[in-house]
Amino acid sequence: MTKLIIILLSAVFINNYVLSRFLGICPFLGVSKKLDSATGMSLAVIFVMMLSTAVTYPIQFYLLEPNNLGFLQTIVFILVIAALVQLVEIILKRYIPSLHKSLGVYLPLITTNCAVLGVTILNVQEYPVAGATTFWWGFAQSMVNSLGSGLGFFLAMVMFSGVRSVIEGSDVPKSFKGLPVTLVAAAITSLSFLGFGGVIENLFA
Amino acid sequence: MTEILTAVIPVVIIGVICAAVLVIASKIMAVKEDERFPKVRECLPGANCGACGYAGCDGYAKALCEDGSVPTNLCIPGADGVAKQLSEVLGVEFEDVVEQVAVVHCSGDCDHTQDKVVYQGIETCAAAKLLYGGKGSCTYGCLGLGDCQRACPHDAVCIENGIARINTRQCIGCGVCTKACPNHLISLVADVERVVVACANKDKGVETRKVCSRGCIGCKKCERACPFKAITVQNNVAVIDYEKCNDCPDFGICARVCTTGCIVQTDLNGMHRFK
Image (cartoon, rainbow over all chains, first blue to last red; front, side, top):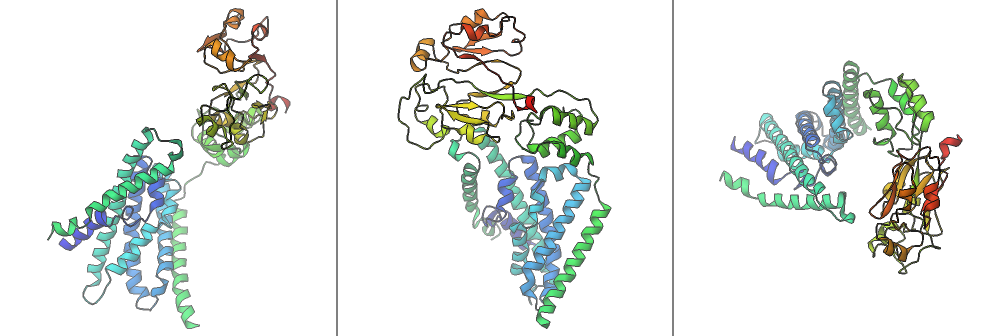
C-alpha cells in the first residue's frame, strides 16, 4: 500500500510529466490560458491516461510479449490510444458539448500526445509482469502511476494558468509578449518542481 | 515472410476492431450539425480579417447560426451584397451595412515637414518609433515606413511622398491597418463622409507649427464655422463628430476656413459603391 502511495505522490510531484519530464508541453502551453479550459483538458488527459493504460497494459503482456511482438509496442499503443481519444471525443461531443468546445483542437491533439504515450510505455517498462510480481500487482501499480501522472498534469496546468493570468495583467516588453514570456515562466515553474526531489521517499522512510 | 505476417496481422486486427468501435460509436452518438452553417460560411468572403469582431469568417458564421440576435451586417468587406445573402439564408430582415474606409490622420508629407534625424535602422514604423518617436520632426505623424502597407490584405495602402495614402477604391474597410500603425493614425470612417481632419498632433499650436506647416494648430476657426457644432478642438487637435456632421448647408466650410489646410475634403467613396 505504501508503495502505491509513493508511486502516486512521486508521479505527481517528482516525476511530473510536464515540469520534470517535459512531455505534453503542447497542451501545457496551448490550453493553460484559462482556468476552466485548463481544468477540462487536464481531466480529459487523466481520463485518457488511465483508460489507455488499462488497455495497453494487458495488450503488452497478453498479446505482444507472449508472441515476441515487443517491437510493435509503439505502433500498437499509438493505434489504441488514437482510437480511444476519438471515442472520448465522440462521447464528449454528444454529452458535454461545452467541454468539447472549450477543449477545441487540443482533444484530438491528445491522440499523439507524448505524455499519454509516455505514461503507457513507461508503465510497461517500470512495472512489468516479471517473476516477482503478479499481473494484477503490476496492473495496479501502472494504474496508480497513470492516475498520478494525470494528476501531476492537472496540477501543472492549474498552477500555470494562474501564472499566465498574472503574466496577462503585467506590462511585458513587446519582444517578449506572448510565447517567449510564457516559456520563461514555464521554465521557472519547472525549476520550482525540482525542489520536490527526494522528499517523497523520505516521508515514508 | 512469417515474421512479417505475425507482425502485420495483429496490428490489422487491432485496427479493424478500433475502427468498428469508432464507427458504431459515431453512429449511435451522432450530433446533428447545423445545416445552415456551410451555407452561411459560403456567403462570407473568407478574408478572415476580423472586422466583424469574431475570430475569422468561420467564427462569424458559427455565431450567426447559433445566436439569432447576431446582426447580419457586421461584414464590412462583404458590404451589402454579403449582408443580403446572409439575411436570405438565415431568413431575417436585411440590414444595411455601413461601409467604411480607412483614413490617415496625417498630411505631413515631405513638402510640409522635415526629418530631424537620418534613420538607418530596421525599415518598420514600429522600430523607428522606438528611436525618439521616429525620424520626422513631428512625433505624432506618419512614420512613412509602411507598416500599414504591409498589413493591408488588399493593397489599398501606399507610401507616397513620405506618408501613407489610402486608395479608397481598393479599401475593403477591414481595419487591419488601424492596428498596425504605431501612432494610431488610421481610423475607419463611414464612406459617406466627405471631410476628414488630417492631423493628429496634440502639441500646442506654436509647437505644431514649428514641425509641420500642415499641422492642426488648434485655432478653433473650424469650431466656430461649423453650423452643427460637429467639430471640436480636443487636446489641441480638431475632431469631427460624424454623427452631427451631415447635410451641411455650407458644405466644406470647415475645410475652407482652416488656416493650415489640415481639414480636407475628400471623396471616400469606396470600392463598395462601384460594385
